[in-house]
Amino acid sequence: MLQKLRIVFFLNMLVVILSCSKGENNTIIEPSGFKAEKVLFIGNSHTFFNGGINTILKGFTDISNLPYSPEIKNIAVGGYTLEDHWNHQATQDMIDSKEWDVIVLQENSIRAATDVNAMFEFASKFENKASSIGAKVYFFMTWAYENQPQMTDQLDANYHQVARQLSSTVVPVGLAFKDFIATNNSIHLYASDSIHPSQAGSFLSACLFYKELYNKNPASNSYTGTINQGDADVIKAFIQNYNGN
Image (tube, rainbow, N blue to C red; front, side, top):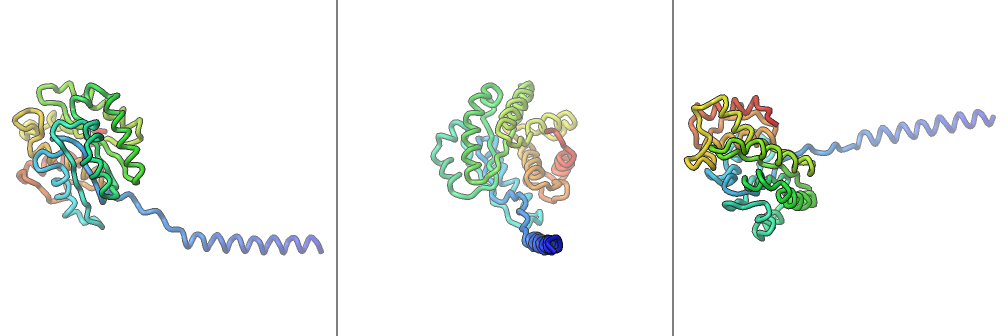
């Protein structure tokens, strides 16, 4: 008799457990996927040149049929380092103004190439602040000066070192510059000063961010910004197949 009661009790408990499990499965809410809905670029003239990479990137997203309309801003001051930005009240106020999904950090090129410790010190401060508001940090790896191509290797090494330490992501625009130039000499990516990006250079930068942040193929987007259709198509096709990270 006791054995039968134990069996009945076990079966009843099994029914309860299975019922609860079924109910829990029906009410699980899958976490929403990552959305780069509110994006802030922090940098210097490499970020704001040619109307700003944020403006070009917004041109892509405006016609990309995303389920939301991204807000993409920048705060960029000529020559600024991440240290300058950290001590700049306007930058702090901009970060505090919204619940950003993505904060993109662009270090001064000379500092990024020559002083990785200072770069890390202030990048980590921004990373901590970004984490406190639930934002993901991406690094905008810039390009070598046109007459100093050897800068690319150091920029690459230092950006990736800092990003690894902070478990963040590098968008390797500088590597894309180098590799594009190696395969195409008819579209000039540098402005006349050989430091800043041309319109095509800024367009290439935005293409890569469009691919990285939104997982979209730029070649399937008709946006051309301020450059001609032919150049835009060449750049988009290059970025479509680019895996330089």
